[in-house]
Structure formats: C-alpha cells, structure tokens
Image (tube, rainbow, N blue to C red; front, side):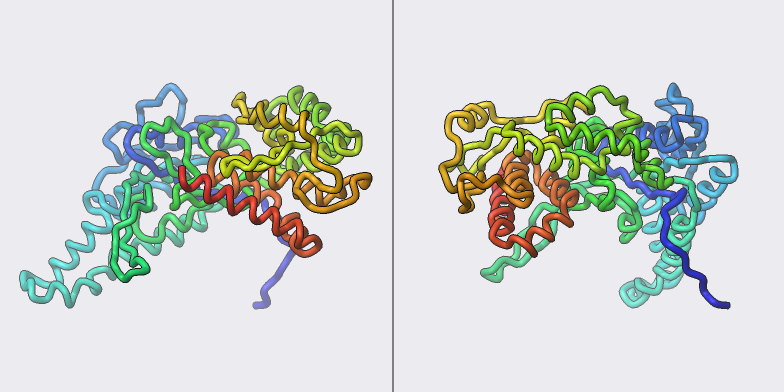
Length: 432
C-alpha cells in the first residue's frame, strides 16, 4: 500500500504536559487549573486520576471529575485507567501522581525486584547475573504504556511528578571527581520525561510558579511565549496551550493588521492599544510580539521619539535603551512590573551617544539614521541587560532566532557585539 503525504497542518493535537515539584509546591492545583483552561473552561471534562489516597479531592470546588487508582501501580493499570477516563468523555486527564508508576508499591521498581526474586529462586549468587533479565516484563509494560499515550488522540494528558534534588559526579580538570548539584528532577522511569511536550518544575513553596532555569525543564520551542519565569500556572496558561494544540492560535487578519497599525505609530500607541484588549484577544497576538516590538521601536526611532541609553561600565548592566515593547506588554498583561533602571533612563537623557557612534558603539556617520539591523541589535543588547534570569535570555533568543541568524549572516560586526552581550549576561546571571 502506497503512503500518502499532505501539507503539514497542526490540528486537535493532544498534549503531554509534565509538572514536577517538591511537596507543597503547587503541583496538583496548578495541574487542575491548566487542565480547566485546556478543556475550554469546562471542568466536567477534566478527569483526575488520584494515586494519593484521596488528596486529589482537596480542590473539589473546581468541579472536575475524580477517580482513584490504588496499588499495584503497574504501567498497565495506569494505562487502563487513562483509557477508561477517555471512554467516559474526558478532554483532559490529570494523573497525580505519576511517580507511583516508578517507585510506588507494585510500580516498575517493585515489579523488577519481584521478577528478580522469582528468577534467582532464593540463590542470591545469581542476583547480579539475572538483574538485567528481570527488567524484561516491567520494561515491556512501561514501553507499551508510552506507546499508547503517544497515540491518545486529541485528549490532553497532564502528569504530576514528585521531584527530588539530585547530584551528578563529574571529573574536574585535575582528574579528581566531585559531586555537583543538578537541581530538581522528576521522579519517574528513565525516559518518561522526554515524552512530554512541556515539562515544568516547581521549586518548594513556589505556589505553582515554575522555575524555567531548572535543568530538567523542557519547553516546546513554540510555547516559550506562553510560559514566563516566575509566573503562576493558571487557566489562562491552559487556554493558550489549547489554542496552539487546535491550530487556532493565529489572530484574525483584521486584528493583526490593527496591531501592526498601532505599532507603526510607536511604542506608546501600541501599549495603549494592548491595554484596551481583553485577555482572549491578546492571546493570539503574543507570538507576534517580536515583530510588533521591532515595528514600534523603528517608528519611535524614525520620529526621534526614543532616547538612547548611555554606556555603563558596570558588569551588572550594559547599555539600556528604553524598555522594550514586549517587556512592557508583559507587564500590562500580567500586572507585574518590569524591572528597569531609572538611573539608566535619566543618564540616557543627559548623555546621548557621541557623534559617529550607534547605541551599540558601532561606527557610523552621525547624520545617518540607524538601519533596521542597528535597531534590532540595540534591542538585543538591551534585552541582555534587562534579563533577571537565564530563562529570560533563552526566551528572547527563541523568539528572535531567525532574525539573529540573519543578523549573523548579513552584519557579523553587529552580531559579534550582540553575542558578546548575551555571553556577559549569562555569566552575570549564573553568578547570582
């Protein structure tokens, strides 16, 4: 039978979301809130599979459906419970906790030990020789579980994981070894976390606010605008994920044209436009913020409305032009103030760049207006200076990846300055 190919089109894709964290980090409530947003704000379509002896009913006021799963916590029993929930009309299934499948009673580790005891039949001298063979049945069950959840259709699955801090043994340049902390890691069978569309880690007492700098974090490239470091997981998070999964996250042509029209009038005009939009209208525009930001900055620059920042010799802060459009937009949309330097702004007004220099310090005639590459490069340096977390650097670079690549190809001199700014920012933030 011949295989048929068609143009790729994302539509009604089921997501696999992992949320890991320590006790009292907000895993369960965060998962339920995201699930409700994914389900179109219909909690009756959210099914919870609880392995923690009734704790999953603590948030019954949200109105979700509830079911329990007790030991043995084999992958087969997890899979059967998920299939039952789907058959009963679930649009989103929250499993709390998925860690029991690995280390709970009757889970993969327990099953392996039981198989090993069966194979050695009381002869401990055979233990080392048969340890690998004892993995056959539990691993086959686990592999079947993974294979099935990857084909779960348009049902979204959210897996909550317990987490613990882990250490890694590394060899230093002098040949000696030392233990190095690698941060919080989800407790699950090896490889389970890699199947997730997104994996978010919640530090202790984080109240549902993921730390995107944790090494085990995994975020789909197109989901970076949805998550922000330190921002609480809510129903709105789920709604944006649902729009993306359904392939309907693009704004209407009319809305995008209106946004571009306001951006063409400059930063202040665009921010006024943004503040007047409701959350539902803002969601599809988020992925265009990079483009709109550049348009607004270009408009301000052309009209002489933007004040360049002075150079700052401090390693803690590089030259900072006015706050970016996307940064201000995030502040207005999430009611969180963006950290800016008042001193930097006043210094900018008092000390403009010297003749013949751009804001990046690149040579150029003083009477020649900056081109689009200079505007973009200036904003890249400013983004590096503003960043408060390494995750912010990653977010900005992901959002502007294509433009950065083109800058490196067409203007390597500016690209070198931008890359250096990001390297210095990365060093500064990792020393914190």
